Figure (cartoon, rainbow, N blue to C red):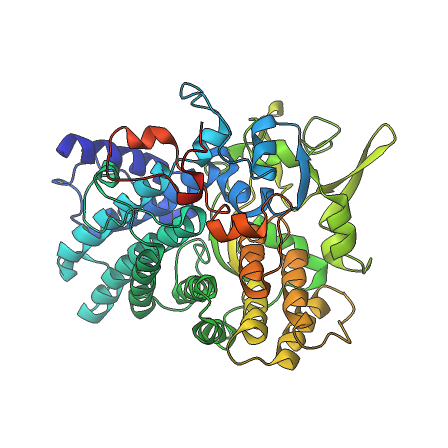
Length: 499
């Protein structure tokens, strides 16, 4: 067991060096074992830093954050990469050889990276709780206790965030709350999604108690959890559960805090460089230590960008031109003007989403280009529009207020206000606005799932209403996960359908 802990800690500590400035630039201990670490403030800081690094690793595996949240949503009409085409087609059970360990479809079926992050959160909670208050930084006992609680709050947040992410992807997942290594998930059955989400709410509620609002002067703002990030996570959990009154209240906590503001249209694209005034929570990768090689094939940059950013004339993932034209009917909208360009291959034109073009060439080596865009998870426009959803789809509706919030976001993006949208049509208008605002930001698939639950109208070309009701939008798990755990079963819809 100690060897397993050592391996996980060593991996986490190594990954933790690839995150944000002072927060993750910790001096490594000479012998990274649980016996010699967790002794001082810096140890707790490094342990928490590893939680974020492991989440980033999970999201970057086969472009998971965007594959789960965007690729099957209709934002892309096709892919030149066959396995990503299967995601677009919702053919998630397509055959993959067990030896094809680099196959993106196989990696996307694996929940192991998320359990590795959860194991680190559990370890951080366990060991930080046991550390005496006196070892934490601060000039008084109260400050030292607040510092300790901040680290605990981040550990609770990261565990809640991982479980919410997994619940949206796989539905029922093993619920592991003990301090043990990532392989412990192999010994648990899948817990009902409702229980997983209840635990996530419990964890994030604890995080809210421990964390403060954003420190605007901190170089680590937005890339580590604070009270705003916790409320944003809580709002999304409640929206996924259909508890819109609670979702609305969590959104209000953020909006009324005064901690965030919408980016002006002139600097809209700065959102994707990271840590903007609008950002609530991001996964940091906007420095050379954090970024990824953009030329590696299974990266967001390699799939969505062409010259002059990277080599190539046509994006591998083909943006759905019809959807872009439908969503962005106002040509003055900065989300269209700045977020997309048109590229040609012969007589064929393609839209290219250029939100993630913060590419840096290293040492004048054209073969080494590093993508430096943070993964923007939650931002103010998202929360404003989520509140609009809560007001238009909840138990007590206020269509006028919901539409006003939509137009608040549109005004910030130089788009004309919507008018003449009445009654239940506001629900669709809100989802459309989220589609415009959050294109290729990991939200669209989940937004459409919530919309279909509300309206009972089909939202996915390759998922019939019957298949939707049977759970086709939840991912299967890789059959290799059954080899070490006889307690888990395949995702119900995909039983007998995964090759």
